[in-house]
Length: 92
Image 1 (cartoon, rainbow, N blue to C red):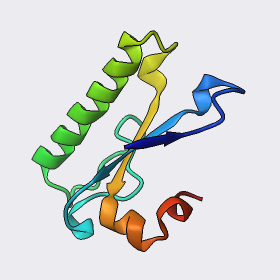
Image 2 (cartoon, helix red, strand yellow):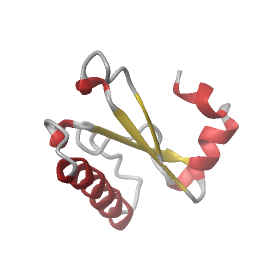
Image 3 (cartoon, helix red, strand yellow):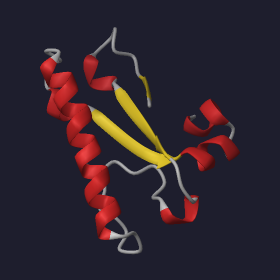
């Protein structure tokens, strides 16, 4: 898990990424559960677990007093896909 964004300018720019273990073919790419509609090719249990993880991240920000914590962008992708895509450069 890591984050980036120009939060000094405005906290709305915060993006949190959760990198998932497992086969990239079984994991969605650049998936934001609060914004994206999941492709039906992914297992419902996987998508439900991703949503639970998103809710956990949001709850942690809320507990720490982050303004509009429910609007924090939480993205999910495959750790292997990100590594193969150049690590940090994958997100540019």
